[in-house]
Length: 188
Image (cartoon, rainbow, N blue to C red):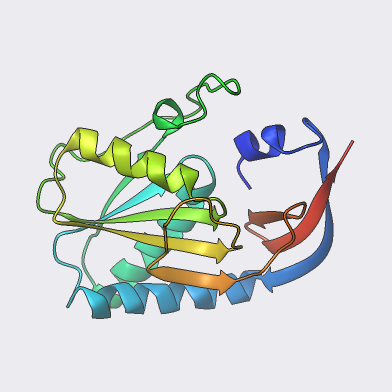
């Protein structure tokens, strides 16, 4: 879970308390490798693919996906990162401040952009990322890869590549880290 989500999840500023580890580090590694093979298969190779990690939670997952793609394809894969804070639809409802750097290649026109995030929840961050990507150019297509899809969508957004489908209660929190994926709650 990104620091932004941690601060904005009631109780605001609370501490994450894990109740279960739902994916280990090895489970995540296998899921990333599987998603990399799925990306290659769907796109008939890795030509023109640009992997974009969403700040902050999706960046580490995206880097792992890029590493797996490069290992499988034996070629360099273009990579970028994107902070969508100023494209969110909740500006004015809560404090929104850009937290990290956006760094994309000069040209994204005609690229196959694979947006990567750690957890897919309501879909609002992904909607903001679509707006942000389109400000930089016109990709051939945009695909979505997430480590965990926890449901509770508020928008009609569906991932193309999923590490794990994890049905959750609305009050539960999913935390993706280098150690694995934990399910828990926020406590004061």
